[in-house]
Length: 196
Image 1 (cartoon, rainbow, N blue to C red):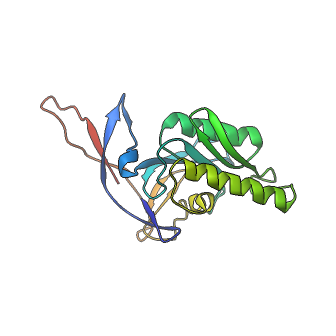
Image 2: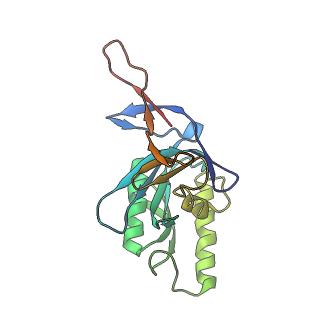
């Protein structure tokens, strides 16, 4: 899905490389991986898709305030950074985080249910400014990237939403496949996947 005009999302198709059985991101065309992880039921539900509009050239950002279920949302240029961002959220008890590989660039702790700070607002506001700056340094073009990331799961705002259970077509209110059949070689092996 492509983010536009704030929290609106429209569908797009992209051919992406596959390495070791994993569909890869393409930072040159701003196609990043996105995942929504259930953080309430310990059922290990994870919806994975692809998103355009964040513009990250490297690293990842993650939050614990994803509408409407307040699950973990993470978007990134590579899987290792995404994993590191989620691990950091767990370590700090929720909030917003930006990482580059193994380095944590910014933290905005929200220890009250992963949604609210217990610090003075001036402290949280400064950490949020730092987080926005760190995310922009990784290439993100969105002025308030954590808030926009919080809307990717909103499955009532057109055209798509992604939840811990997968990608949802808003108009039909049904799950849709993220991957479409890609081209195959003469031996029947695929080297790319077309992602919706």
